[in-house]
Image (cartoon, rainbow, N blue to C red):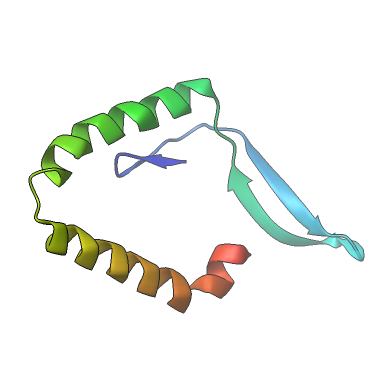
Amino acid sequence: PIIDGKELEGTPTAQINNPSDTRELVTKFSMANQYHADQALEACERAKKTWGRWTAKARADVLRRAAQLMREQKRELIA
């Protein structure tokens, strides 16, 4: 997983295979645990201090851009 902009090494991975052809790998992903969840929550708390100083318009602009990027990359995101 990536937490606070840093990729955590050494985390276990899982994979999903095509159910109609189990030899075909669809995707691999990192598994998170309680430690990772705690780290992510701490990162959110730190980011909230800066985020809260931004104007509502600036925050909305960031969220709109994030939504646009997710729409553009939806194929990669669902794989």
